[in-house]
Image (cartoon, helix red, strand yellow):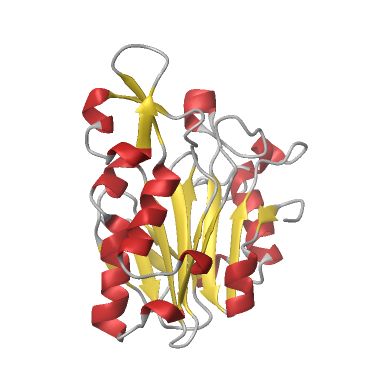
Length: 241
């Protein structure tokens, strides 16, 4: 981890460029970088600095529209993929980027076939098994083997703070939730739910890195739950190194 972003050593050692930006005091808007920031405004300046720090620029970025669904888009050029929450590429020089502020960023890499993916998994996407579907896509479209895939489940709302109602909690297995402080409330562990989807698809635990950081209680990250509409956004990104 440097002053601007968190990096997965597991992904880096496998040959993937990867980074999750942080909330940085002293930077414009706390180093927020919304997906649709206007040129010249603080968030556009932040994105330019972040992308430069990881060796890319705006002309090399592919983004997902992020509609809290489970659609997957295979991309070969920059731009926004509509109605999708997961991006996959086998093209070098292309940075896959998603925007988060409590939802789970998941970065996945096939170190042998050289395939990169970025997943945006909120509670809806997680309940819809977006991570399982993404790994199955690796298997069916690229012939990936489980032992060749490594994954980073990044900083997001943690089980320590992420409280939901019965309707949401009921969509998850009991091991991913525990009773909350008041009747009908539960603390939900989205990180473990997604890491379980990875192991259910055959990945070894040693090939999955899970961030311990909760975006709600850790002020080094932006959080919509904590800050509401004034919350900034982090960018999670991956590319074939």
